[in-house]
Image (cartoon, rainbow, N blue to C red; front, side, top):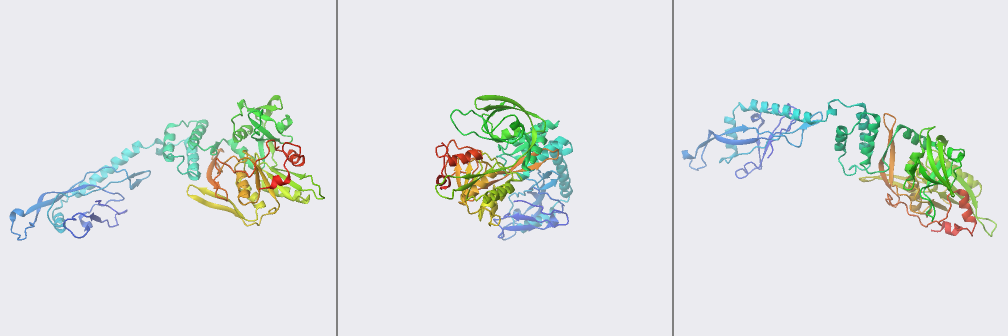
Length: 548
């Protein structure tokens, strides 16, 4: 049974509910003791204490029916014996601390009715114990607060440094935005407390290390910390320009004899790499003396980008030649789209015309550039399209949605999900479609990731396109980028997504309908050659290309 002070302020009227106190003698389940017997004013606390009926001071008649058995008369008095203890559940809040006390009355064996007991209490409750109880409450509250404050971290006492505040800003950003609210099965609040106590944060570099260690506990390669220069580079990259060496990179085709590392997909004309003689098909073996054999394309891209005017060392294999290059990073404008008209051989008058569109990234120019390429190819009379998403590592999520709308007349594009299930749906009604009827093929590989996978999955599940290639990367998560107060930033996984068929492609990828020939090239000129030369090892005719 609990005696509960329910008032939050003294003006409220607390009552005490006595639950099944005399179940052997009283028919009702509850007895209510009026407030006048408990004149102590208690604010926002729960009290627990032992009430014991001891010794005799008031007469209670014997339960003998005759009522003349004097030996059956005895005296009882109630003596309040407060036995205080700190509870683990808190209901009183003092800033960051909360306290709770409970008061559990216990009754010694007593023969008599409930009303007799209450009368006994009314007649003989010593007034001495009311101020005594007040004193005990005050002393215990002060002692408990002192203990709690002495055990609290020093940073709550106003000792937060500028570095602590930056760490807390990063912690709070992840706390609010991160998709997995279990934070990889750990107490995110406890991690904050321990880090502020134990991690050195005397310099900005130490704080950055502490933030990176915190992020590493999530075991999420896509949630990452960006130093100020990397954050600026990422922002400029999504806006159509990047500070780097002007290379588009990808994973090499698995061929016997091909060196380990990453392959150059293209070099931006007049960019630092292009001027040094790096070209499509070359292999990057090392970046700043670090082998690329097990390096992912996202890690490699981070290493290639950097402050304008800084140097990066590359070890390049071009054919059988090994080159060691020192390149100076420059600001490079990126055109995310290349297109080409491919004329297929035919015995009839009208040769099939295929419009090839290579989409290399999803920056702010992507959807507009795709529309422009479609319009240009349409003027040349194309009757089918090939959209090449190979080695497209993604970019801006909204651009992926807009490009999907170009090809679809209606349907779901993607489901956005969190730990509780679907929270948002992106679809289209066809109002933005400009190429919803022509046959469409999408080329994918393991370098196809993120926004590229959203686009490929939408076109496949809506049966708008045939997918050729190999399973995609499998990045089924969406990140948002947050700027911190010192100019650094965080890329935080804020959601996961499912394709229109409710397929979770994370770590699995989008599965294509058919593979491509092993030697199928990755540039627009080579693609057209494979469609035109029936003797080449990569040859595909139109039936093979568009067949489901």
